[in-house]
Amino acid sequence: QVRLVESGGGSVQPGGSLRLSCSASGSTVDINRMGWYRQAPGKSRELVATITDRGVTNYADALKGRFTIAGGGVDHTVSLQMNSLKPEDTAVYYCYAHEAYQSSGGATYVDDYWGQGTQVTVSS
Image 1 (cartoon, helix red, strand yellow):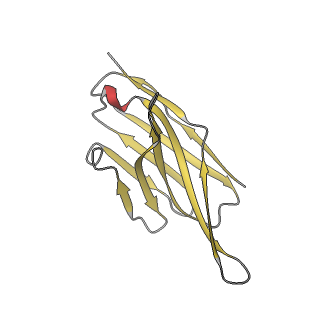
Image 2: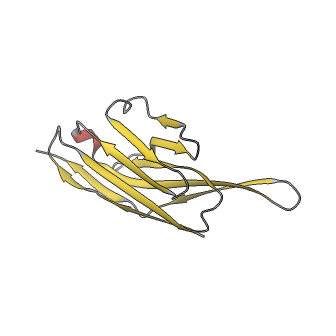
């Protein structure tokens, strides 16, 4: 019952920058972590960055320093600032949301949600 919509993808030359954004709607009250993953053609989906509702971030080691994630608070929006882009950054970028909630019996349940993806192409 969570919908994620990404925007901001496009084509850019190597060394350029893009900013992606994502907004969550629906049953968002239990979301406690949002972020971005990416998938290049023929490759597995991989972590880009995540941020918790308390602002704790996690980055893929290879991307830390070039990419910056922000948001993930009560508005349930998240952005990804991508700088110094390289051709190997070309991929479909997916917004991600994680929720955790307790049942009436106290058991904890988790769910993951994904956006439709936005294409990022880095080429000369």
